[in-house]
Length: 185
Image 1 (spheres, rainbow, N blue to C red):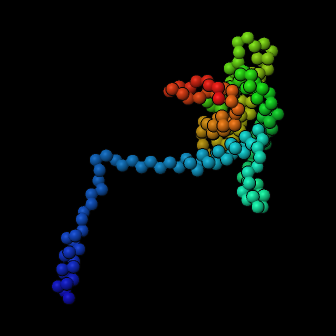
Image 2 (tube, rainbow, N blue to C red):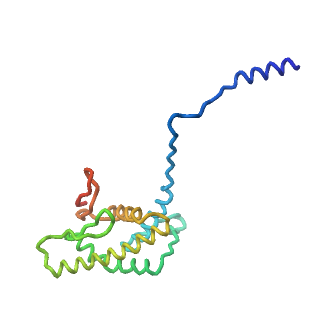
Image 3 (spheres, rainbow, N blue to C red):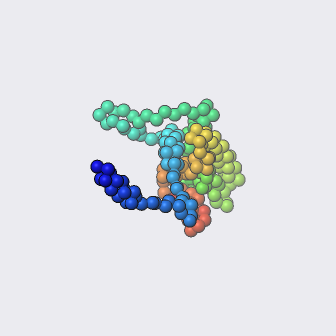
């Protein structure tokens, strides 16, 4: 019995291979955890945009006709900014459709209008843009803070959503050919 045990032990020791895990270059492990955060930001953005532009509620259960629920808790500043944006959306859409206004890469409005526009109209448009951008800034900062991300990440999600919702003919600052340029959708 001792002989068998000795032979088996010798076989096990001989058959064990040594594995060297050492490398000349350090190993890089790239784990991207931003997907979950992005999804939360996107849900917040969609919720706010639906409040401003309107939307039909999504259905979770068609049999029970239950609407999708996503709890939102915004400060009074954010709620007020959303309400102000809702009241000026008609004017902004008119300025977009006439080509006076575009949305830049940071999801803020920018005057891109014509040279021969009346001074009073230009001042009205620029005033509306300033008010809209101030409210957008309030909303972007709140969503970024709520989700623990940078404001630039939040504004990118807003830009993507605005671009998706916009009709053809609206102007956007898009990345093309290695630089940002103004293009009509």
